Amino acid sequence: MSSRDFVYSKFQEFYNNPLTVVPAPTSFEQREFAYLMFRERFMVRHKRFESIQTFQNVLARNVPSDVYHSCAYYENPDLEMDKKGWIGSDLVFDIDADHIPTSCGKIHDEWTCQKCEFSGKGVTPDECPICGSDKFSAKTWACDFCIESTRVETAKLIDMLTKDFGFADSELHVFFSGHRGYHVHVEDEAVHSLDALSRKEIVDYVTGLGLSVLDKGVKEKRVKGRKRFVDAKKFNLHDYGWNRRLKVGMEKFLSTMTAENLKNFGLKNNNLLKNKDAILSRAIMGGRWDSVSGVSVATWLKLAEQVKSLESANIDTVVTTDIHRLIRMNGTLHGKTGLLKIELPVRQLDTFDPLTQAVAFKKGTAKVLVSDAPEFRLSGAMWGPYKNVKVVLPTAAAVMLILKGRAEVAN
Ligand SMILES: [Zn+2]
Ligand SMILES: [Zn+2]
Image 1 (cartoon, rainbow, N blue to C red):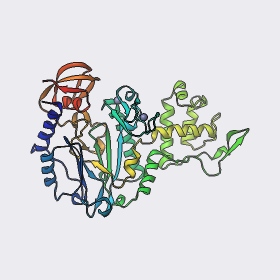
Image 2: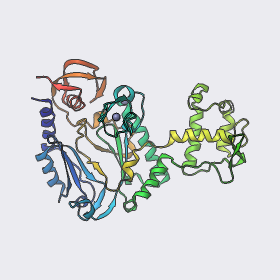
Image 3: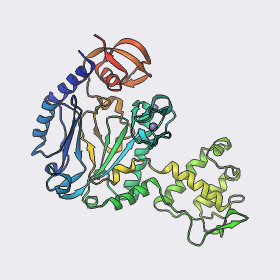
Image 4: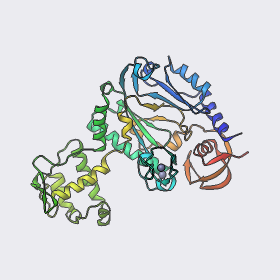
């Protein structure tokens, strides 16, 4: 049996299992559905279905590698794009390790330019540094640390959506993506009619883009060609939204800093640590930002900038602004891992373990020849590292290694 046939047979069993439940998205009959054919590798899209049962039958018959539905609601979801009749769209956020530079990404992720074959490690660039092409093939790994880093970003996003935007937990749907990240969907009526520009403003807020931390009246002045700030009394943070986030973030940041760390963050002003108590009590708590000796507006600005980058949520900005986006369907398999996209309760983000709870293939084992795999965790156990060895692995691990191009079925 070829490796591809083996994985296909597992996907086939999954979609034909009467116990498999693919939850229906809201307003089912107004959604466009799409799926990628496993063997033929082409995308079937602009589909409309009467019921989730009809659609599940289609999945069982066709066995796709990846399944999607539109974030949008349409009058005619099965017509061409310009004839669909856009009614509205969910507000969707995608947090993916592909966009987050982690130290382990430099070890386990590789990209190759499809045009000139230049390659590198870590996060895939937007453009090839040699030929400028934007087409890459990438080899990534769904590692524990990468997934954990996306969980942290997701937690920050949820905190903003609930505390700053005022959405209730019940209005948020949080999913593990099935690969190495999370999706957050807001399906509230209030967001449906937002156009791409309004969504861009939400993106800017979440990422802290264009955030101004100076009160009006502070001027930037050039003295002998160098930037100076005058009227230092005007640095001020109030208690709402991003201002509050910066205050809380500054407190957290300074409480855990050493002089050495501070330098790594580009902050050379030793007074930040020397006068830490005064900063916490007089400036952050008391609002007297001009009362800490040796800490000027310029330093406050630098500190605020650093804290902003730590407190903003690292989302894939393109996904949120696209009002016609297709998003992976809840309860379906991810073609790069064999893991499920699965919903989790908002308040269980901290305790949810994707590498156990999103495992779809819970039975059986398979013998595979692993070319190269780092040590990894799956279904509550550690596996590997492997290099050119034949091993018997649980089905889920075998499927993942094959889909990642790291193993073949050993006959
Ligand atoms: Zn290139
Ligand atoms: Zn990693």
